[in-house]
Length: 394
Image (cartoon, rainbow, N blue to C red; front, side, top):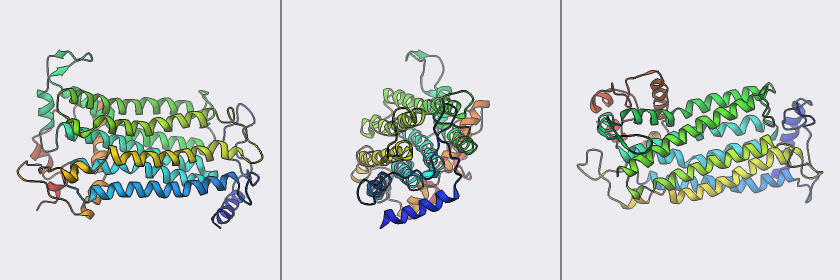
């Protein structure tokens, strides 16, 4: 049976692990999965850990199936690559979370090294959401720097101020696009400090890395979402974003995923060993690592189904969209080209580099006042930000 095979794998992993894993018996002891932490069976030979795996396996399958179905619908009406590539990236987030948390549940002794990896993709999804909103407001193919230079400037209260909105656009872009790199750095630091037992997720002491990573993470993710939401709100008021795009619903869907993860990290990290007590059947590992992974997988099912509405392909399948030149109806891109286009993250990577470049003054990019005309910038460059229709047209 599947749980028997898993038990063998887990016992091999336990035999190779140190017997001095972090035992939560003191204020200075950092929490970590315990070796040989096996609960009593509650039904036949099934432990709570086995049951969580048996529950999560079909949930993982359902999440992946739901994600693939949504992506299949977009791929079969892939007429607006500038928008749909971002939607495909965002739609993959629940499946990514479910996959890594299921692996963390299977190999629970390595939970603290496996589960955080999914958060890196979360950062790319937020950047993709910004590019999607930007495409709605100012489609690729227009001179964005000129557009925002001519857009009436406004202060924080919404009052008109002299000058255009280019500086505001650059600041907003920087806030939204810094997150992939900053999150990657934070996760690497988290895993390294976890390995050397100085991360300590159940402590907020300044001597442990958890406090500082948590504060930086809140700051950076807050800045990223503030950039996306403020841009969408401002451009919505300007009438640049159509209500048919349901920008608020799409932003709230992604925000919901992030909020649930932050709450779980707080409850099962900081409150580790304080709110819940292990028993003979429900072990320390089950409470503090198995349950968070299970909850994330269950949430992934919900959000993957919610995305069937918030990121639906209906507007691309039923509506008539024009090509980037506005001269003829958009033509569907072949599926394999669409896949390559959607999962080529060079636009987000270069956007992140640009975001950090803006911290040190003007840079020559799609977001800078020093940028040249649109055709001068995209033709002959390898930015990856020009539409697929232009990149593949011969």
